[in-house]
Length: 568
Ligand code: ADP
Ligand code: MG
Image 1 (spheres, protein in one colour):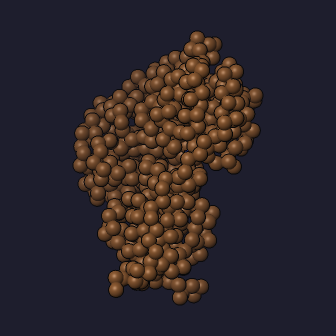
Image 2 (tube, protein in one colour):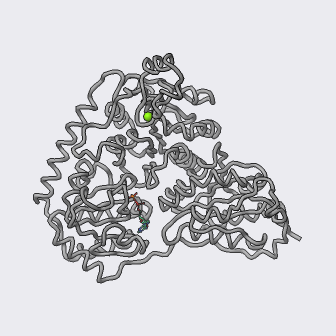
Image 3 (cartoon, rainbow, N blue to C red):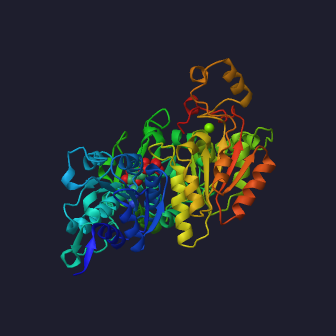
């Protein structure tokens, strides 16, 4: 008799569904699952916190279109992973979480780490289930993988009772479930396409908004042709950056506020009208703006703004439909319109103020100086991971992306602590697929702290991630070392230290050197440039640049008062 264990069935089923990566933390009862995964040819990355493991697994889903898996133990292990599941679900990224749980015969007895895991995961996922027997494992795993990718992508959970991990069954009793194909693609209805084209043609101030749904949907090739043929201006959302290059002549990111405020027609491609896009409402949008909304999720249509045209389906397919129409009639939006000249003027003016700030070389440095020099040195094809408040907001405007799915950040849920997990996923993929893209992780000092111990993971697997901590001593901003010292002498810091402050000039670089990576303490432009060049030339080890900046450095003066705090 050819016997197979529960652990093997989980691993082989994941592999059969083309799940290539597993991130997790093992312990009772899932150690055997991780070992079986390796035996089945899945790459296993052991992490230091389940949250980061789940962030990593979800990044694989976004980058490849097929979910990564996350393996956690029962009770607290699973609960720590919930943050990652929620983040993936909010971002519409596929991920499959496998959680060990207490034994079936111990339910409700107060067993070790007993918790209602399947019920708990329902709020954080699209699908949450426990196979009722070993024989059911392959079909439940297939359903989890399929559900994570089909429709609006998201998180799925499979619960494995501890006693099922090492239990055995005759292989011939287990039905083989073949790999589920990629999600079926649907086109928009023909009438909608005709309507959309006529709304676009009638627009005086049209704008395309490219969201991370367009990145996930791999719409870059058709979208490039559509933008170039139509001559329309486009604006990427934070993770829509790179679907078309940031330096594309039709990109109006440098005039973002103006473009949103004055556009009369917006072609919305895979982006929700949520907080990131100011709900599509005044004062940031024209109250009469006509939205042509393209999304694969019918329930999304009409959130906050009733679209003039709703095109339901896959972005890649729908942009192809739109393209076919304009190819046929040769329509383009003229380049000499008032709208284009307004946008161009605004872009030139904005570039000037950023440049002035970027060229100041005072010590301590400001954000703009730091990002200016980083942007000069980063390779064209590098994957930029970014989080933090000012660090992410300012970095987004100054660090260009030239390729799709090359930017990962705090996303729809505004989650801090995602960066290191994302960077590990991207770097692990680069390494095992033998590609040569660099992964650069630009972190605020506070953001870094949430998952800081993952530098050990990077060192352990020799992942040459370059982490740049833009350190302003706090959340939003902290205080300088002298002030901190004075405060400590004045009394109990728990009563007087600003809640936003962190230890001034904390040596995050030494966290990296503790595990054998490269660490740099950076105060000046010269130190920044030489440390970054050195780090980028090392393909073996991770590096951390601890860049001390002026704790009072802030975003440049914004034209609108509501833009001054991290609300993009
Ligand atoms: P952003 O953060 O860039 O604004 P969101 O995450 O808010 O983007 O929105 C992405 C949208 O894209 C979601 O509403 C999702 O349903 C949609 N989406 C994802 N993939 C596709 C696809 N292939 N085709 C159409 N819409 C998609
Ligand atoms: Mg900070």
